[in-house]
Image (cartoon, rainbow over all chains, first blue to last red; front, side, top):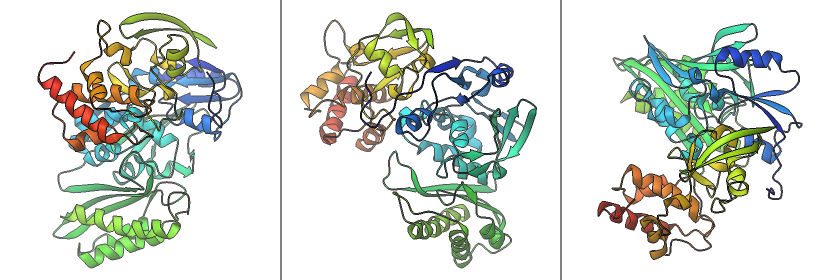
Length: 295
Length: 160
């Protein structure tokens, strides 16, 4: 079928469908040359069509959607385990996530369109490592970790250390992210995600903010802030966190904390917004999100 | 690389040999010869290629056909019965819910999915539900009207 002008053809693919994690790792080991792990393909296909990614013919692809153990949500003790190949729509529909970390359901529910959520996966959203990835800020403030498996590698990496740059993570060429580990929220903890796009529906974040807070006697006993589309990677606003920790949850303190967050981020100007607009909105949305956790 | 897949499209089984790089859109149009599934942006923005995969709406342009192996695909042709339009399609006709018509099959499949989940949708719920399908003629008012009218038909039992 003819592609429209400006849209590129996909390269010839050699398709691999592993049934478990071990076979996927064995495939990674045996494949010489370029190899790509795929799942939803909702980034893979558009990136090739637009020319952002290009591969030669005969590209080996390993489809981790074939691996049943990498799909689904479960709870073990105080940890929620989300398989990397879990569909975004299954994250939204998960009773476990809705009950124990509703901030994640809220954030994913606003992502893209239902058609994309029915195909794209949560692991893919993290591995693509877009600065604007909407699953990242909630998972960062929840202090989530990811399980990274490779040829001689099997470790749990804090999401805080996972992102290295736009499109870059700690994953090596032969590594894969198998699951996401999220601590269950306790009853006295609150979390809130606010996203600003250029319109309401199906849009990339201009700026997004996630806040997790534990407030006791009107004092921040614990607080974590994370922002998306605010720096080369989704980031925690640690200076603002340090400022707020232990302080009274008053309007002035919250506003000052939000201002520190807006100062410490490193946004760019692009087609969606200017740097200064992003900073202004980071200030406003951080203030709103913290306030929502205090009420 | 050529791979064999089995697809059930609108109730009929197909054993196909496809290129691993072929999207479901390409296979449906070129091999199954279903031309109602349109090619639009090819990158998951516009929704004209929407089909139901095991009952759930997906963009067929962002789905590798090999990943759809063993699934059941429904397109607008699958909604027809004995050559008759589905009540939802009738509603689109009655409410002039198209201008150029290019986006219509995608909207019909999305609306069919939404109405099967609930036939008691507010206007806002309908509009929210339609996120991911674009009408470049901007004929949304009549599309929403058509879906409301179709919901009424479903409530009165005129549905399959």
